[in-house]
Amino acid sequence: MSVVGVAVALVVGAVVGLTGAGGAIIAVPALVYLVGLDPEDAVPTSLIVVGLSSLAGLLPRRHVGINWRLVAVLGAAGIPASWAGAAVAERLDPDVLMLFFAGMMVLAAVRMLLASRVGAAARTARPPGESPAGESPEAAIRGMLVRGLTVGLVVGFLTGMLGVGGGFLLIPALTLILRVGMQQAVGISLAVIAINSASGFAAHLPGLTMDWALTLSFAAVAVIASLAAGRLSRRLNERVVSRAFAVLILLVAAWVAASSLPSVISGRAL
Image 1: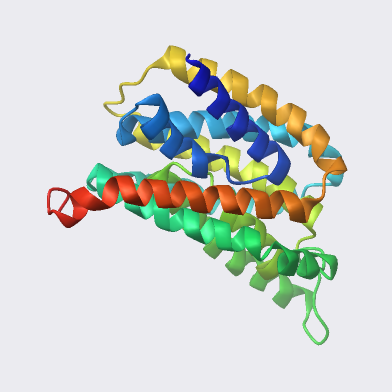
Image 2 (image 1 turned 90 degrees about the vertical axis):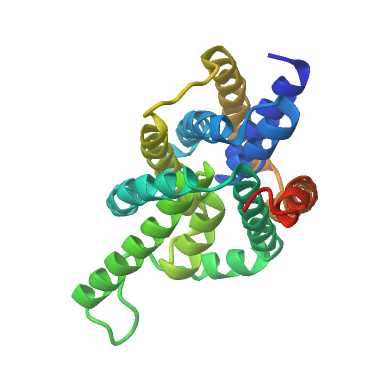
């Protein structure tokens, strides 16, 4: 693996370990434009790397009391949705797929820039399933289940189609919609990303050809970076990290769009 590849793997792993999200947002365009993979190879490669990095990032956070029932709901919804997303990706031109990716990167950056609002919501969050005033516990559980299934379907579809773990959507969804505290939300996000990544990769297996030596070496570096970043995350200012990463994502999104848009406009991608 080249020096550029090592640098990209370190960044991807560090992002996953620090934020519980976002690694694939930069992994796919980096694999395409810096490492030189085709998008159809970059997506499954990204799923392996981000899935393993998420498992590694989960280890330092296992003490936060992760709600495994909620993980199961999100994962169960995400598995079939990831297969549907992979089927859609096979029918899209690579340049169109990368433009979709640029759009999702912008959404991720906006989410990061609004992290202070998410953090405020998390500080007042209730445990999943705890009923608000005037609502029965049964109704609260049903509502959480419906919202969890909806979030799981959306995130799973994007995982299969774009090769992203979906953490940049999961974190705000868990804190704002499912009312999970931030620390537990990161742990749940990492667990669901690992499940969705495994399912999404399985959906890409038929006819898959990829450079396994590159993929496994890339994943190994990313896992080491994720473990180190997960331990470091408690000492860093979460808001500063989120905003810095948001700026990086916006820059990469502009780069991806500038690289893919000309061929789409010319009609070669349609």
